[in-house]
Picture 1 (cartoon, rainbow, N blue to C red):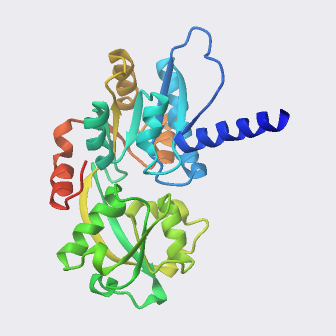
Picture 2 (cartoon, one colour):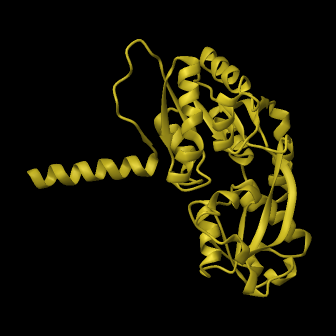
Picture 3 (cartoon, rainbow, N blue to C red):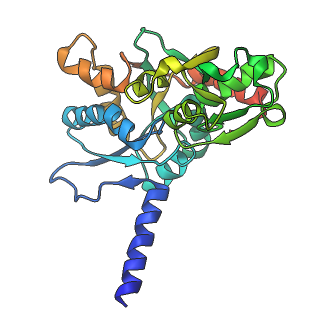
Length: 290
């Protein structure tokens, strides 16, 4: 009997990991629970370093009992949102346009890059000693990416390859891993010849990887930054208070600077659904359903 109970407990834990995990602590007295989640670009450890200060700030600023739901991978993010009834999501543009259809997502704010812009790009990376110097050199190579729905880590590079007459499914050998730091590691360790990642995915791993041993084969075009979105069942007041708190973050404020720098942004701006029409156009051009 005890053995059956232990097995059942293990299965429940595994299910929690598969769908996303949320702290089981009881609600704080007098505080409304608000569940937030960020699409995992990096490993859980790196994601925690990036977003924990921001989530603590949101809890302090809004007075909500902010609970963090952690998805295990890019592709696990949408079901984790659904399974845990998340109120606020931080996601890339392609995930957002899909969530508009599946969860009636609406953008609250978008990220401002450290350079002050509201767009970002991807890169195609290889080892310095690989002999891969141009996009044409990719033919027949093993390529690793985090997800087919990553904008700066897949869609943008797909456009570049198509411009050079390369079909990802016919001319390359594609494999997927969970996160973009895993992509960088795979190329660095020689497990893959080429990697597709966001340009700004490289600096966070410089402590564990000698980036001078990697080369950038090509840069992609720029695409709109990630957005923070609310969903159909998100109370209007929750959405309003979260958006206001994010818009109030000021990089010139010493108390805010560390929060923003940890997240890799300079702040947030108001966002509109039309900001992401270019993503819809790109996905349609690539015959990618959303």
